[in-house]
Length: 193
Image 1 (cartoon, helix red, strand yellow):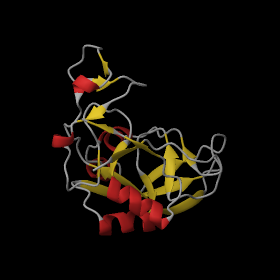
Image 2: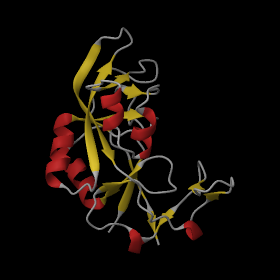
Image 3: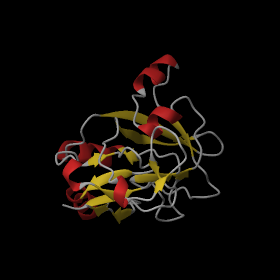
C-alpha cells in the first residue's frame, strides 16, 4: 500500500487557481467540518470562488489549484471518483469559478470535502511543531510519516490530524486519476512507518 499527498498546488500556470476565499465557508472547507449548515445559514447554493488571474491562467483543469486547502474538482472528475472509490464521510458542494470581472468562468465544479481527520500521524517519525497548543501538528515545511496500521484501508481520500495542508490519496485512486488523464493533480509519496 502506498499513500500520496495531494497538496492542491497547481501543476501549470496556464490552469485556473484560487488564492483567496474570504468566506464563512473557509474554515469548514479547509478543516473537514460540515459546511452545509453554513451554506444554508447564508442562503448559498454554490461555493463562490474567485480566480487569481495574476498567479494562474484561465484554462479549466480537473482539479483547481489553490492555497485554501480545498479539493476543487470538475464535476465529471468528482463523479467518477465518487462512483469508483470509497471516500468515507464526505460532502460534495457545488462550486462556481468567477473571473476578475465577477463573471462566471465555470459552474461545473464541486468542492469535495472529506469530513473529519484520521489520527494516523506517526509523531515519533515526524517533524512536529512545538508551539504549545493542544493539537500537535507537523512543522510547516517539515517531513512526516503515517502509521501504516492506523490508515483506513477502505478510504481512498482522507485528511490526517496534525497535517495542516493537503489530502491523502490511496495508490489505487492515484493510479485511476493518472489512467484517466485528469489534469492538474500533483502527488508526493508519503512515508509510512
